[in-house]
Image 1 (cartoon, rainbow, N blue to C red):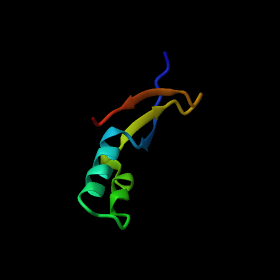
Image 2: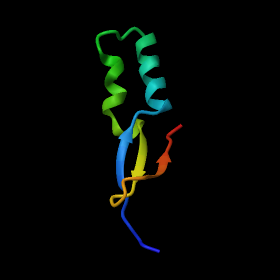
Image 3: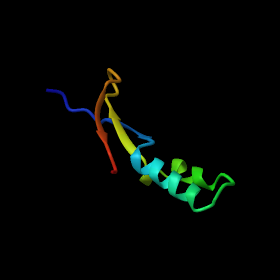
Image 4: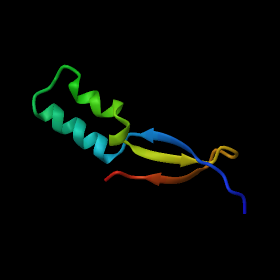
Length: 62
């Protein structure tokens, strides 16, 4: 059994899209609804192996 440190990558998930839709519905039409895609704490996190690049786990915020 090898121990590795996974590579983490933020990816848009359900929470990101819900926040985007909520901001859009609130009337912010000038691109403000895209802000959730720039905030890592609102995105899901993909863990991949640095050796074989296979996805090991996907942490979903919602």
